[in-house]
Amino acid sequence: MKKTLSFIAKQRELLLGALICIAAVFLEFSTGGIFLTKNNLLAIADTKSIDAFVVIGVTYLLISKEFDLSTASSMALGSMVCAWLMARGAPILVGVSGGFAVGAMIGGINGLLVTQFKIPSFIATLGTMFAARSLTQVIGQGRPIANLPQAFIDITNYRIAGLPWTLVLLVVVAILLQVFLKRQRSMFKLFFIGANERAARMVGIKTNKQRWVMFVVSSMIAVFAGLILTSRARSASPIAFQGMELRFIAASVIGGASINGGQGSILGALLGHLVISLIGNTMTQLSISPYWEGVIFGSVLLTAAISDSFSRMKTTA
View 1 (cartoon, helix red, strand yellow):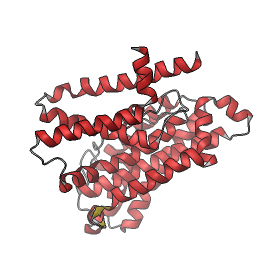
View 2: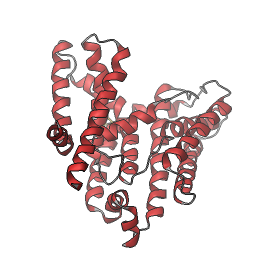
View 3: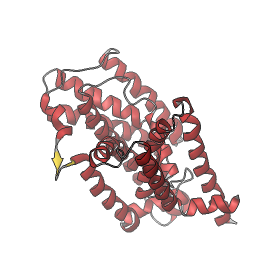
View 4: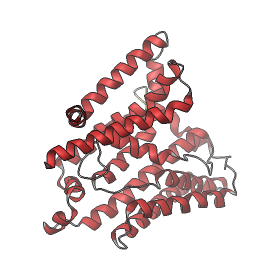
């Protein structure tokens, strides 16, 4: 069992890819040849590519051994501020800028609490999560904000070579960030910070600055995703995206990022995100009650975490 779990941890991306292929083939046959059609795949990619941006930001934080539980709340608050401004006649650029300003503020506060006040990121971001979610209710008075400009709603309709622009952007960003993460010196420092922060400081790495920047970037990426999803929904809701922060973290962990820091990849995170997305579809085709989704989802997550633990134990032995 230990050898099997250790193998899973080392070959995580390969095994996730194989699992996705198996699930795709099964869904293709169970849906009568509908699942792998161009239109269906584009629809899935268009929907899930937006969440994938947030998973990437969360993965960078996990590599540096930090959590961000406020991502979904940042998405909601940034979207509410943007919608509130536009609903009162502000130009789209002003509304979007307001949303991103909220993201930068939340990320900056998270980074400040962790780096300067030495509060564990789990507690710090849990606090900002509750505060941000409450502010969405204050802004909207418990109600969604609609009547958004048509130009803002049309943002999600743009295509590049027939593909959703969010998907094209995700592919480009994922490739660049994967290369930067492995090759670019400033990005590679995150692995050193996550593996051994004290040693990283001793060799001259500005660990506090690096982590603060990553909190800000993660939060702004979350707001970007929130604005796109708000455009698609045609309104901003104070209860939007609830519970999604845990799925973002889970996708990263399933994809190979470690809660102990110093480990992770963009490709693995995206594969983990896709696995989570396919769980629901597969359960539907197997006629499994949706009440079991949490059990299956949790089992996959725990298997990934246990395999990572055994892999680390073997490495340090």
